[in-house]
Image (cartoon, rainbow, N blue to C red; front, side, top):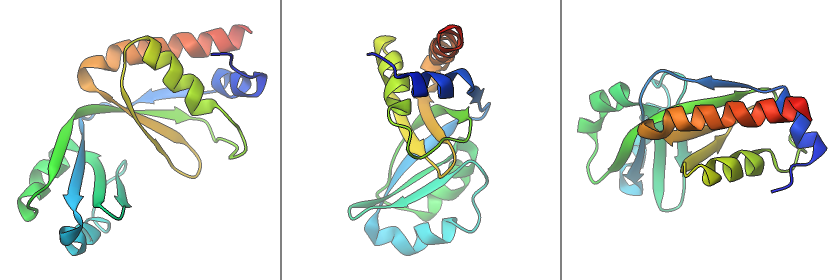
Length: 147
């Protein structure tokens, strides 16, 4: 994939932060929505709660989920994952930042779960692939710095 000059500039200025905690991705049935909404007041950073027509999707630290999952029924969970944050404030008009990241990680055989906040992009990578993902991303950033 050809990376545009604007994306290269953003990647060259990006610091990849790999969070040390294990994370879990959870799908909670909509019938449990009221309980899921109560989570929003108590979760620690980094966490995410997304309401979809079919589910409530939650990303949170694995140990936090272990303490909460007894409240829910019918959920599905996946983990452990490692959270990667692209620590640069992204201009919302930039096209292709995550495409460049996901393309490079796909070439390395690393599956990602992408999430964005207003200011930053984040990905979750299976813990067993975290070292490979970190090396791949650091190489990508170094390439962008040199171009």
